[in-house]
Each structure stands twice: as structure tokens, then as C-alpha cells.
Amino acid sequence: MLTGQVVGNASATAKHPSMEGWKLLVVQPLQPDGRPDGDPVLAIDTCGAGTREKVIISSDGQGTREIVGHKNTPIRWSVMGIIDESHGT
Image 1 (cartoon, helix red, strand yellow):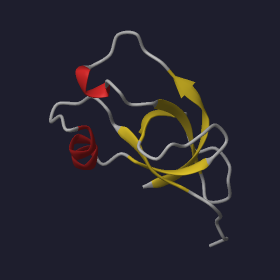
Image 2 (spheres, rainbow, N blue to C red):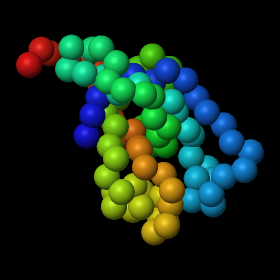
Image 3 (spheres, rainbow, N blue to C red):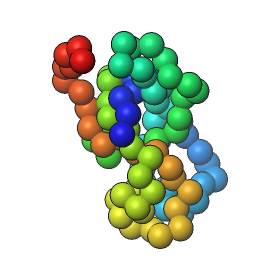
């Protein structure tokens, strides 16, 4: 799991059936100090996160397959929680 910040939404008129009904978010992974960590990722939203919110994201394939109910989903990232506040390490 990683922390990230929602930087926007994405939409797709043509997509895999397992993605139907899911809100797609563009999430920037963050380093512990809050700096960007690599490129933004596309994640399904399981928590109702909004733009600029800090979130917990996971790339656990098995967990994502269970969430969407499809064993062959191309979805890699999912938002698992919204961070209310965080404290230094």
C-alpha cells in the first residue's frame, strides 16, 4: 500500500466490463515527506474520494479482483481509504 493524492478523475467510453460502474481516479503516489513518487496512476475509487484528498492506494491484484468481482480484470490500483490526517514518521 502507498499514500497518494487524488489529482483528478478519468472517464472512458470503451472499457473492460469489470470497470463498469466504478469511478476512476488519477492518483499521484507520494513519498513519506509528501513529494511525488513516480508517475500518477489510474485507480478505481472504493471510498468516494475527491480531488486533492490524500488516499491509501493498493496494487494488490487479488484484492482488486475480489472488489470488482472479476478474475480477469485489468485494474491494477484501487483506493482503499481516505487519510484524514497523518503524522511524521
